[in-house]
Length: 319
Image (cartoon, rainbow, N blue to C red; front, side, top):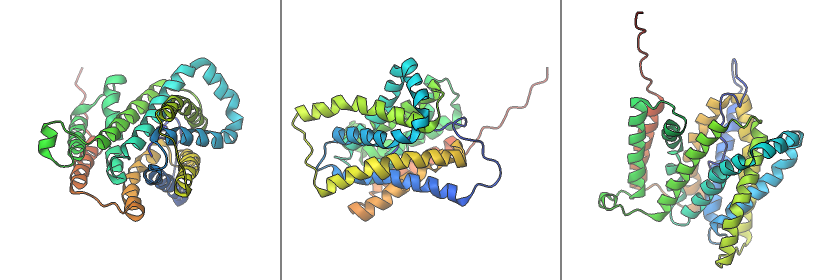
């Protein structure tokens, strides 16, 4: 599940020389655990409403990690005193809304489809950064974004061109698209905020903020009569998303940033989509639809255009 704060070059140490294989294995295992959250959320859906799952995952993961960052408690409290509203806003967008929308969408669509749509997140981030941060987009990045958006349209319309023209979309896919947009906005806001605190303590603060923001949605579900009826499978899924898929995943991501550097650690994010497809096939019996493959092809082409093709530098003009 893409609920990790985006790492920036300043967040991790600059890595010189050869990087040990164990560092790549740590990062790969992190994204495998993240992919497992999609499967667990789909598994828990009959027994636990989406916002209840969101609230308890964030709350339990925060409680597990809080003692680990005890040396940073003073810095965390100081940050809350000076910028509490900013932390709450970023946590609400990136953790509460992003995750709650995914869990809601998984009630109506396959985990595989959700994983492919979430691969759009970096493209969403790039486009939003153009308008929020003023970062240049450039023709190749713009073309890549267009390809990725076409791929999203193919998946959301489930390959039905007539439905696309009539703007008739599946609600499940639309919830996941909304989550990808929230993730992109969260990334941009976090980049602009520069909270000035180490990555893991920042994760704990944002988890707490996300849990606080999820509480009204959870209470609304209770008032509406949507109550959890957890049995063995639901309890196991909740334990996974809070523990291995929550606290441990965040911790391993922090470690991978420290050893690989921010850029390389974030690039491995695309492994999540592959892992979701594999795990969904093994545990949920899902298969890839034709529209998934077609949409994924456009999204991959868009990512390649946006990241692999660099514009040629213009020669310096004579004075």
